[in-house]
Length: 372
Length: 131
Image (cartoon, rainbow over all chains, first blue to last red; front, side, top):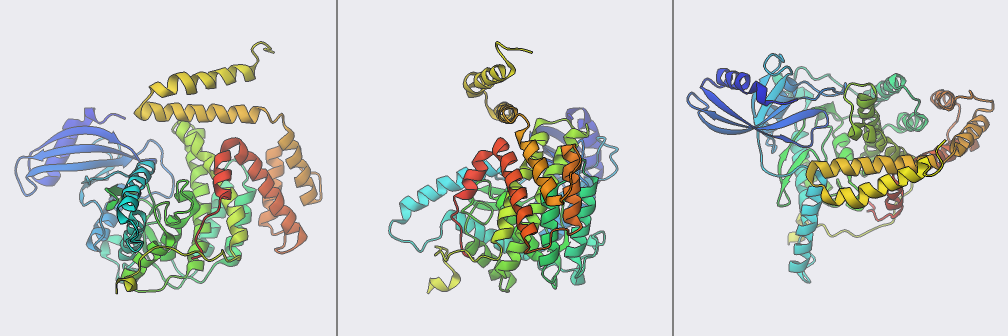
């Protein structure tokens, strides 16, 4: 899809919503959108309350979508709530839900600096780590760049998790309520989903039985991002500049978000860096604890890692079906379906290891108490 | 039937040409596309060496697990196994459950070996924390 032919229609839409004459320059298509298409958009508004230059991102649905993803209007409402909670997220600018302007619904959000592509982020961190190690000499108390970022990510998630259904902003009324039967309902949904796939999945059936049998009680429900991991985080010079993609956000057990980031499938091959391939689990937990003010039950997080691994396997299979169904022919989508095998392999090992304590290992993360 | 070159030899030289001649000259999105094509061809090459042995082994193991002869169609047989798992035919902590997990692991490992053997190797180099 090319946006250039819609330039005039976009200018009209932005002029009407911003209350001032707008001139639009369409930039490059941005990476990272498996389910959404993202374009850079520069807008000059001549007059009115939003007069000035605006660097934006236009986010529209891709040619085919998966069932779990939210509409653009819902995603904008979630972004606003996250912004109000103090998170680093792009500020919403406008939303067009009808599809009448460019043939698809879209949102416009502020463009932030930084890169989201996981390999680029990991290279960035590797370079920073090398510099850090050269500079620190014998001083082993200073925090490694990856651990500092993992700590920051923990803080960021904890801010989102302060939003509860009991004190929910009115703008989130579209979110489905969840209760203590959250995991049982999730298992039922996943089984239903498996029934819709063209091929049987014995390993995923096996894992679902295990999840059903080992589900912890869910006694805390908060707003959750539900896709908080590299690829959806903008990073610049090793620092978080923005959390993106609230397309799966909803009410859930907050430990689901922590488990999702730590799940092996989101470490991008950097398995030893258990917090998203970035830094240590200890640093991530400590960052979370510093804002949330509650202790983290590591066993619950590991349970949710297993749920997350199963969920990613199912998303990967769905992505493949977008190709196989003819909705969007793509080698990338076809290859993504094969990622489910990695998840199955992880499920078979991680479920067996769940009850086996790993050997003690010292970590170098500096906690607040170490300052003294 | 082609013999000189046969399908395997053609695939092999196509992959070699892609990897050694073309890929080094590509950049950006074209390089990513080239790498995906190389990966797809590598998977096809690995899968072509199987000659159905894996499928025969899977069918035999499913027959043992189910205690009956499954459908001759591998997908249908796998579906019978999936249904038995959901119906809780393999009670936890029983020899049947151990046999089931062994079967699932060996089949998954065999498929993953074709698709991404590096993932298995990296996964086996455990270096993880205790919390």
